[in-house]
Length: 312
Image (tube, rainbow, N blue to C red):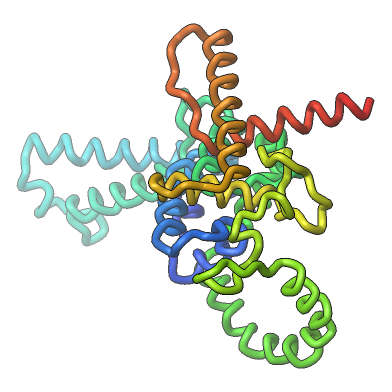
């Protein structure tokens, strides 16, 4: 199947496609309103990223089709300006010229999205940074590879066609009971251990997941700004707890975090100032400071480089 390069591929319907993204993109304490707002804001950036990988053969064919269909439509429009009666009374194969203008116009409109802009700049890494800004999802094996078709293909798998999701829903009617009866009981012990190890009692809130309580002392990851680095089993994957904490803080500016949370915010703001100063040195033209989420990504990369350097 040719590489898809149209906006249609990324602008998925929310009713089915959104559910596939919940587990990966949703923060631990986000309401559905904030979550959908982030996903909606990520679509323009996602479109721009996908368009960085055009199918060249298809683009060439589409450009040819646009040229031919547009030329015929243009000639017919010029003839109509000379004598407008020609549109209705001059017929070719029992069709008047107005019908042919409409057909050529539709063909041009359908082929145009596949045409690659002549002056497009190939910079998928920067485009993907804009996607991460909204989704807060950047797996470790994607880092430094956003310009490759591996990341492109993996990214597009998260945005399936509606018909694919519909068929998946139909199949799940039969597979889920089978999974609950035969597979789920084998995982009951692990689920019980997780609930026991990651449950905190938060006063009026009752029992909640420790990650959602932002317990950095027990589950922090220093790569993402926490003051400690716990064992991998106790940390959230990909710094999800730290990212959720940052999003919750931004959405609730009047909320006062714990001392450990305040220390994490201070570390990220320090990294934000450092990243901004480096940008100014590289390009004297003034730029807007990066967001706190992008600064957290910078902090992660800085800490990873420091860890690799120490291991050498």
